[in-house]
Amino acid sequence: MLTRRAIALWFLALTLTSLAGAESVQVPFNVQADLVAKVANFDRNFAARAGTRALVLVMMMPNDAESAGAAQEFRSALQRVPKVGELPHEEQVVTYTGAAALADMVRARKVSIVYFGPGFAKELPTIRSALANTSLLTVAAAPEYVAAGIVLGFDLVSGRPKLLVNLEQARKQQVDFPGSVLRLMKVYS
Image (tube, rainbow, N blue to C red):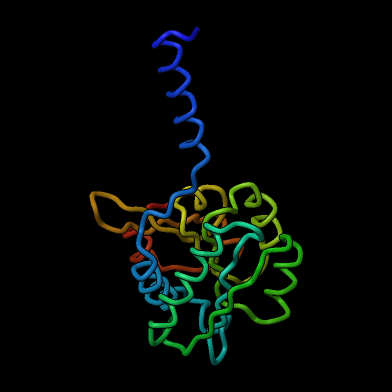
């Protein structure tokens, strides 16, 4: 028979295990969309990357309801924003099939931004490598993705959204923010 202490320890371990694997979206999707639209304007390479319109791929993991829901919510929120980086824009939800396929798609279709919602934690090392040397702004809904190699992300600090940037990956992906903007962000290098 299990003692109360054993049950409590088992319950604590189960809770900590599920929290450790969680990829949390801290900032509401409409706020994320507004911030992406504004921050893109500060990327010195954004206009050259985008051309006459910004193409935004909103990635979702196959067979992952949370990822699909987040992708649809972000896409809907971004569609309500008039311009991204001062340009007209188009959003497409794309099912992730692998990092190499994503990199090929980015190059072939002149993609400006790729957005990752929950479900991509295990894929981040290969995504980071595949997208290096590609002119692209990658954006993450989950703050922990930025430290793992996504260029831009969001966190909630004292109830306010905070921008996060992975400066090393930004350089590899030819994203160039001025120092005045970087001072407003939490920088990972």
